[in-house]
Length: 142
Image (tube, rainbow, N blue to C red):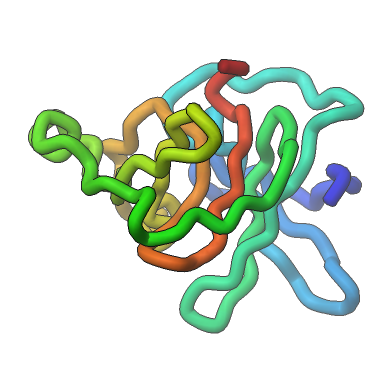
């Protein structure tokens, strides 16, 4: 969705932009750039909020742009390299191969875990075998 007016929340972590009202439901919104330790980028017409449901709650993630929703077959997903896991990149669940591109797959639960502070600087969304993956460019265009 396009980025609407966001209501700030006092004492929230720096990466939590605030909340929005989405069809009568309150949705917490975080900036993926800030979440991954990058500097914030000004919002522009291609900025979007990716809304996800996790543990029965809705959350929004601001990204630079969202180009498409992908379904990547389990056979085209490889586990994250061990080096990523050892280097503190534990939110990376795997790498999806799609039309000659590599899509970094993130564990949304770990991205949304507000107590976790060591998140890497990647910016794609979630997937485990057979779930939909959403490619975004929050950490920069490819």
